[in-house]
Length: 326
Image 1 (cartoon, rainbow, N blue to C red):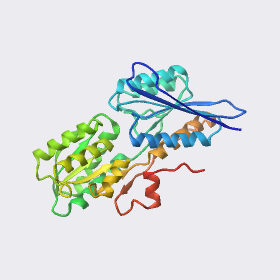
Image 2: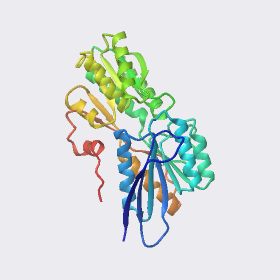
Image 3: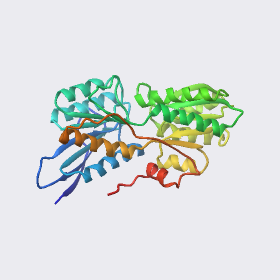
Image 4: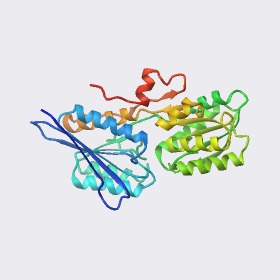
């Protein structure tokens, strides 16, 4: 007989605002596997989908305890390091985490592994990526090339000036998306990249930098907004500048606000990752490592291009509004 208990608390000092949420599934026999699942931050729709996937996996495994915890801002690298060190000190069986900074977090993975803790990265890995730490993530370069294709299609054959609203330089996902998008532009030489700005994963910052870009380039025809905050801020800047339909937007991720932008025609397309699958497969892979001594490999969790015409496609819906099945 299984017992499901959910504990929600705000704890730990020295890491900024941190949310802790534990899903515990216990059974009559066998020891409990204790996992800490740490996103880059809490609060964004994307990470809540990761959380939902981790909860789903925990509910389907016997004797698995999953603590969900994260800092409030993806730029709080030191806070995430402190948080991970805390769980290493507690002696959890596994860490499943998304690195806020690809360089700074490598040592954490190594330290945890030396302590006998199984480590997996989801969404974002480290540089270098330890050989014994698998990465379950989107192929961000491939997805960003699709974004370049989608923006070229939206802008049309005449092309023109475009900009990137990225989010956090040094984050592996950010850097790969910028890299992939600029590589994809080689297939569309009539698109001219004039600026790359950073939102620091903040809506207000995204709004401000996009307004500045639109002011500097009143003939801008396109924007690639590389994550949720960047997209929502860019949409509002284009709306306020009365450039809707003139400055096309291709965003990344599928929060309700972003999907609404697609429905109303403000956003031409969204590149949707599968965060639910990252959380789900990350927990399942960690349990397999701990219980069965299976070493999983790296995994591409996939992307789809979301447009107004395919929003109700069942496959797309599972990316946009995932459901825990079975």
